Length: 138
Ligand code: SF4
Image 1 (tube, rainbow, N blue to C red):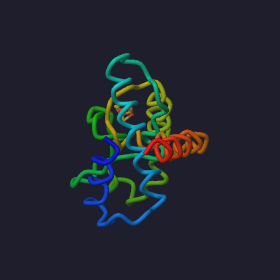
Image 2: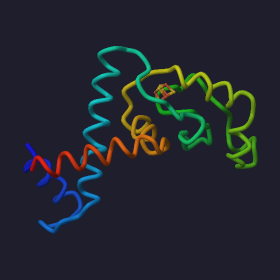
Image 3: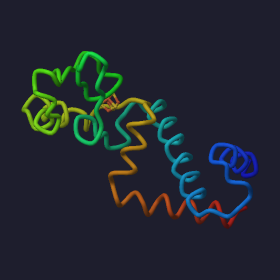
Image 4: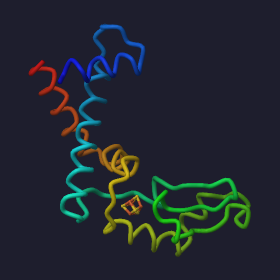
């Protein structure tokens, strides 16, 4: 299993057998994201902190700005109406409501789950611990 993952990552990055610490960290992060996706699907409860409408948002070709790819019914606004000022859009009360609401929302969208690890420094320790554990067990 570890060999398969290593080969996949080598193909993906062009690394050819050379030791790279980031490889272990990204592998650990990917494993943790996949585990969280499975957990979210199983328990249908919020099991990670979602940063939608905070650190994560989606902008489509028409300029419509959404908290995430899933919530197409929760439009924050159109950037053209805001003179392309996304930071101001994100502190508008409608966006703040969505941001607060997203904390209790749950889905299996990997991008949101990745963000939940990246923007919570305490999670770094879990990623590092997993990476070290994977390295030792190889
Ligand atoms: S949990 Fe998923 S659906 Fe809910 S706000 Fe976050 S990314 Fe969107």
